Length: 561
Image: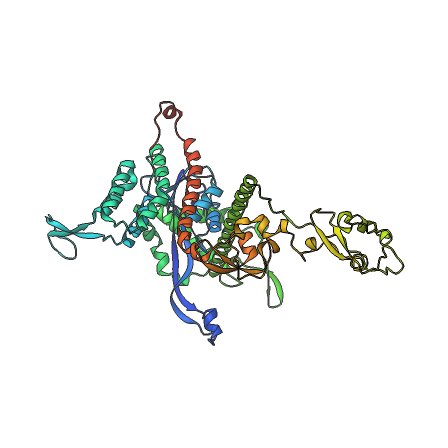
């Protein structure tokens, strides 16, 4: 590895390819549940054996590999480990529209400029156009005579050509003029009821504007990875022919290091021999010196001995490459779950903040953040021959207005007479219960204990707009008799006449709505959320780009595209 690059070049092109192999796949959980034998594995034609991550250096006369490694997948953690293999940081990164690459670049190289490959963006637009029913080739009105025959057919007359929309798509990413011509071609050739390509453009048009500005500032760097994909296939051809034999990730990375040197034109036997001689000469013709012997210990025939160098390259706890694939898939699923939970949490926090602002404007009380704690429970004790005046905490909650002329000083602690009480924590909580229940059984405010719902703290008080959707005839209780976080299932009636059952806390805490209406407005909300997140990401990129624009251009008023 002495000949391998140690630092990242100023410009890096990133790509990846999946290493496939043949093997056997165990039956799934559903098949096992219906009686399949868990050990009965079936032959599978294509199994994922790893992902090869590739970084190319285009700064020289020809593109060269800079780093090639195998990882379990192309998730964020795998890309970050790949970036950490070399020192320094590039200034310019060209990659496809992959969220994992973008996130890893942003977290590892925050100052690097990420430019999305035009080749991959064109492929995405081409895919959407085909979904809209636009043919890739059309029959020419006037056949074209060719100077040389076409391959395969041998005809010298060209009768089929590329669709005008795809011809405009090839030039669309060059600038605003070409982009406007491309949108005109969409209006002309794509029916108005086909929305696949139009929705993609509405979501990614801000990305295109960012690409133009970056290309204007740094126009001499590569803008696409499509021209270099053939080189990747040429470099990795020996690896793919033996894909089924690779199980050890460490040895495979060594082979990829040799492939990297071969692609760079530095794989010469004389150079390798010179390095090997130098290493052995520095160690007295030994592979290593005793002071450098840090090999692990192993038990052989009942005796402890140091493990040999060649055995350190073996997988002793199972094949390492399949284990990397499993760990990558598990990390991807965990990150997707975490991202989903973060999005839901962010959405709910935004909804709560907007709801509280609206409550302040309309004068509606805001729900408390938590429930007040119940008074400390008093252990039951005999109240025989005792009076209520001996319980100081209960005298503080005696309601003098409702109890009238009744004197608590002469009441026995064990009397079953019902009297009114007023809660110390909330003066609006007034209830009636027997004296013995408070002195002997140590009961407290039923509203704080959750046994009753005060009208001022009910669903109708905190969520009057949800109370209007409370079904008037199919519910036992009224909206002022249930709490905002109740687990009771209720029947709701929306303004469009749809009826549906839903738990109360799912409507207040999760902000759920009518499922029938959501089928209509759901896609529109999802599209708007994607556009909003895209605009936020582009705003961050805009701030980064403005730091790169020369001051002279800003003074002269020469704004970028």
